[in-house]
Image (tube, rainbow, N blue to C red):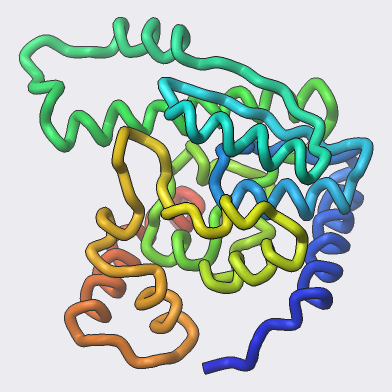
Length: 248
């Protein structure tokens, strides 16, 4: 297992990395979604330091839990983030009303996930709207643990210009968040995508983040966990690649 992360050094490097990517793109700053979860809070902390005057946190409830909204506001207040709130409930309802086909069981697990994935895709549209009008880049909040197993919505929260946490596993995200003064309540909050009530990342995985991080950092995990992780990685490969183009 690797040694403890150099949090000050990692924070400094990531802040400069964000600045460099914005400079290369010849834009002015960054915009990102603020959900009330740990990853988006850390993104906010990094972006605020990289661009104190040109970073925007967009809070986009879509039939979201009240607690998540409260947590997002807490993060914004503690870190001094510039925010915009865009409520997507009505947009979601209108779109769903146009899409629901007759004869489908909308209570099925497959339909539940299909409808839930509409929410991050709507948020992606909102973020690129603000990116366009402000001449910003969209910053995504996925970490290495989530990216590895495909735990993100393709063209939803997976749709961004930068992914600064992409080489940090979940335990490293927590460590860096503590260093950058993210509220402890957010750091210790059970990980959830917030797609429906009582939804929990680790329940969806079938194993813990601790197990996933251990595997990614070169440690040993039970064989059944290893098989699940490698199966999820393989099955979600299309999410991490650009669309294939024929070589003829």
